[in-house]
Length: 377
Image (cartoon, rainbow, N blue to C red; front, side, top):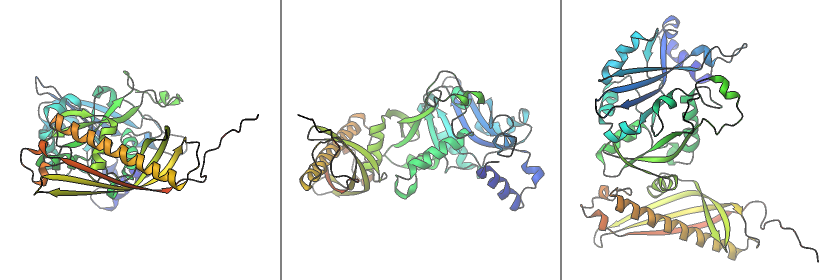
């Protein structure tokens, strides 16, 4: 059995709360999905249950699918656990859930009822990532994934990779982040899961296909939540700058133009300073970062002068994108910079925001100039 799930069984057994017979009778929920009909209020819940023999790595290979998906319908969230006893031969167990997925139409109605339901139950975890899907929930919940046999583990592994670039190693996309955001003017951004096919990848033999981009999940856009209700969406670049300007993202890659050629830089150790001057009613956001050149199409050598050109170009690019971000925030009436949470009154959209960017190239790679073919005369 895969290590994470073997560890779970060992923890339950060693704690004395469960014996092995009881552990084998658990229906361990890996992903929970929910959709809500805006007309009737009917909630459709999907639960992906781990099949222990399906994730086994013992000789002989796995037996059956890694997970099985159950679909239930109810008008009240509190009734689902009881209803599982009519379709599952094992005890419904949610403390090991790795992902919550909600449909876009449910998110736009507001998730306050779901938040309150999960917060009241001490057995359910809220430090788990939540995503909104703009694809049919039934398609997403009935699909297998590449490289990781268990879809919930697939998403968690992907988010863990991204989390390395965030301050404190945590992506602020957990259920508890959404709940905490209810008390703030600044929106919470939740990833949007898009499934790249109209048909679900519901059979494991489909994993024999070498094309991993077909019938696959992607997380690019972000859902904008205010008071636990989705009010819109932003693209990947805007989502990135939301985390940068709010001091949460410490490393990213940016493309800039230097002397008419493309240069890609990895931006490291990003530091954000916010200075709100109440007397002049102005917010100044200072951004400082180190740069590592990862791709350089300039034919000229990397001299000290050229390094300064790279830094200046990056500073201009970041400042321009930051200003565009501020304009989008005010045009949409989304306080993406959290200005009102700084104590500004209702006229926050009239508050001038100044961006000051400073950067320094610290790494240029193994060569100071690009290779080129000398033309023979």
